[in-house]
Image 1 (cartoon, rainbow, N blue to C red):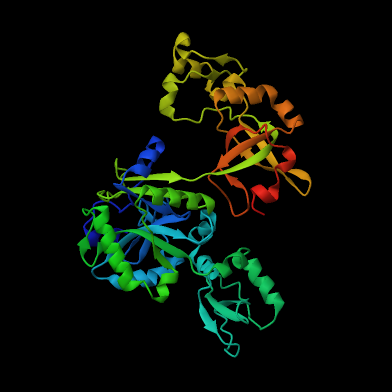
Image 2: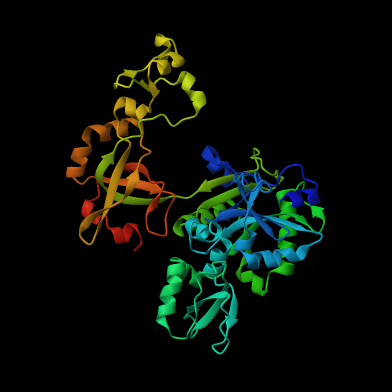
Length: 438
């Protein structure tokens, strides 16, 4: 990154522009023709600069001072994409996009972008395709994958102590490869990972940071048509599709929810691209939700300690002494410093009032009620009600509706939240195979 900063004359590392939450603006964004909507893939955001891929995360590894404080680079994990985008020098290219797998979630992407390069390449199936008669090269690690009649892949072996010979039809080799990387067989059929581009910021010596979104979009469309469309790269490189009308934007939202995509991003047609900032009236995001009816199985206590910002403590009203005595008004006892000196600690509001922290819920699977997660997100009145009557709710197998951002690849809910009681639904109808899609 430092050499790229010098090449482009940057004083700071290039970071992608941030997106604001839509909040109460959602209906306005649907109706406002000044905003278009694009699908937000559930992957990992990466900026590509001259064939090198950087995340939004800054390196915290002080043992590598040359990269400390710079965006984390993951170019070696995706050599196919690096190969394609490196062809645009010396004029250069900078694009912003999402690394993703179609139909998969961000945790699957993490299995490629979050591991060592050799493992990432092995999982994607990179390597030289070999005939059965080729001699064994003991400097490589071998694996057999039976897709089209059986093929062999050769991978660079950074772990030289783990040498593995390939022999056609030898199942022992399959088990050995599995031991080297337990997730290998889960990934190999997915192939090389994809990259969806949604903005272009520099091309052939011209910067488009001062251009509007519409102007940048024209450049991106022309570039994609010239270099990607109709080529072998179209399988791995795509571009986002803008939806312009209110009906189009709402239809996209419904499709995203039905297909368990992460949500939408609304973009102002006249918005500029401001690296590292979250400017007003530029980009907004809305994440879709999924809903499920589940059965109350129990409750969990809240976290006792205050988890907010240290700056909040000066006015924080909830405190507890070492012997369990509660205090609500620090000012009456000389302020926060006096309470701390007397052995008090800041505690959560839920712990102060003795409320529950979350509700444990389940679904029927094979005739048995199985835990499917925990949820919170209820208002104070509902939380107090659960605190008082949770045992009754468990005995009666009370049904509640929850919402979540998505289901993970293991079938669990991500960030589930309480929505409402479902007095109109029987616990016996809350089936794992229905709510989990299995």
